[in-house]
Length: 171
Image (cartoon, rainbow, N blue to C red; front, side, top):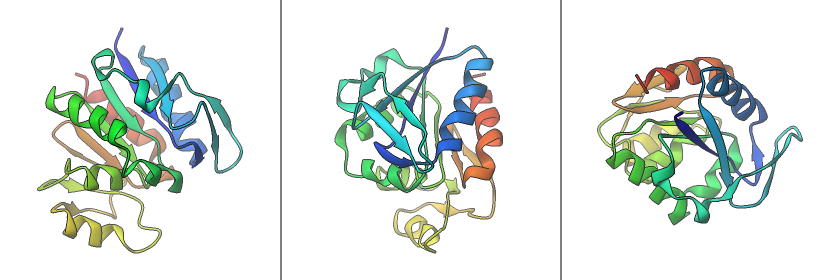
C-alpha cells in the first residue's frame, strides 16, 4: 500500500482541507500519516488531530507522496528545514507533492514551483507577487493546477478536486 504524508500546522490549519482529502486518500486505498511541529494540531474551526510524527522525525523514504494542508497556519513551515527536506527529497524521487490554500507558498519559498504554473489562496493579494518573486506563473483563478508531479490548489472549495487530482498523480 502506498503511503501519503500529510503535514498540517500546529494551529490554524483549515479543517476541511485536512478532513476531506484524507477521506478521499483513504477511500482510494492509501495509508495516511500526519506530521506537524506539535503532537496535536488544532484547526481554525477547532478540529483536533493527534499527529503520527513531528516533522523532524519523518523519514521521507517511508512515503510515496506529500500533501501540505492549508490554512494560514501552514506558513509556519516556510522556514522549517525538516518540512522543506521532506518535500525536496520526495520531489527528487519524482513522487507526488500537493499543497492547498496557503500551503503552496511553502513550495514557492522552497524553489519547487520555479517556472511552473501554480495556484493558491490569495487572501492578502500577495500570492501573485510571490509567484513573480519566486519565478512561478500564477494561475490564482484556477481551483487546482498540476505541473509535473506537483499539485497546487487555491482554497477550501478545492478540497475535493485537489484530493481527486492528487490521487491521479500516483498513476
